Length: 326
Ligand SMILES: NC(=O)c1ccc[n+]([C@@H]2O[C@H](COP(=O)([O-])OP(=O)(O)OC[C@H]3O[C@@H](n4cnc5c(N)ncnc54)[C@H](OP(=O)(O)O)[C@@H]3O)[C@@H](O)[C@H]2O)c1
Image 1: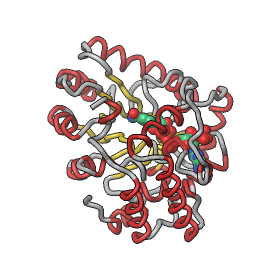
Image 2: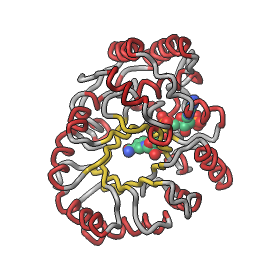
Image 3: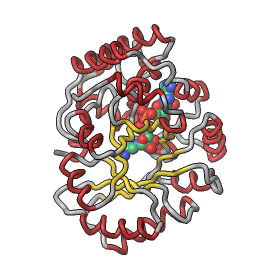
Image 4: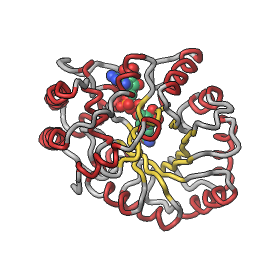
């Protein structure tokens, strides 16, 4: 799979937390995660900033997330906010694109978007015109950087003809490694940074779930509906348990918890620019995540983890294939 852990490890050595960990703020959407008060959110964002986090990920479709982030980070020119424009159905008109961009600018209380990541649900529709409009915003300085999220290989190849894509946000963890089939290589070749979401599979890849007989019924919570579904597409709960045991075993050598092993493995994969770690208000969990990259796990153990994942999980389809229903 084009993996050279030694080179990847050397690249990673020079990275700081501020480069490597983006704070995922889907969790501010109280429709999909546990409900946090605005005070909790402000305090928690402050904790992450104190740890050195400077990039925050949100989306137009994450409920109150953009608005609350805008409020918490008002005037913080040292912090960047990456948001998304999600196009679910038909082709958007230039007016609809404009209103999306202006809505995000208003919510975030900023004059420009640091990075706009396009999610495009229907690959049958040609998105050339949409990128034409977004390119104009780039030229005008309303958007500083363009990215995409959940594009499959063909879609990304096409997008590269239309716009200067700098980042690609994809799901990537020891369970979901569809990116390794062809996307990783395409991104490396084109100098596109992979920004990886779900690095802990919503929290499943942690000591909290080691030895737990069956996945919790959390139907209202993203872990229950999004990540349980993801696990079922790649394998099963028994496979998750076997993987967690292997991660715990390797983690012991480095005094790492399971979640730290998950993050350390991920940052050492080729093309990974940063991990998008989903917000937690639990200070111990925050500390563990922030202290997960040093020391780097040695390449033989990284390979052992990859081998174990290969045996337990299937990688069917390209990026976002089953989510798109193909
Ligand atoms: N582009 C897309 O389609 C897409 C899709 C999904 C996500 N995203 C973005 O990526 C971000 C990250 O994804 P994610 O939040 O799903 O991934 P994640 O980092 O795998 O999961 C985050 C959750 O794991 C739990 N957790 C965090 N640290 C932990 C630790 N040390 N030990 C145990 N549990 C821990 C927390 O939940 P508890 O504390 O409640 O257990 C936290 O909310 C999202 O916030 C969003 O910005 C994008």
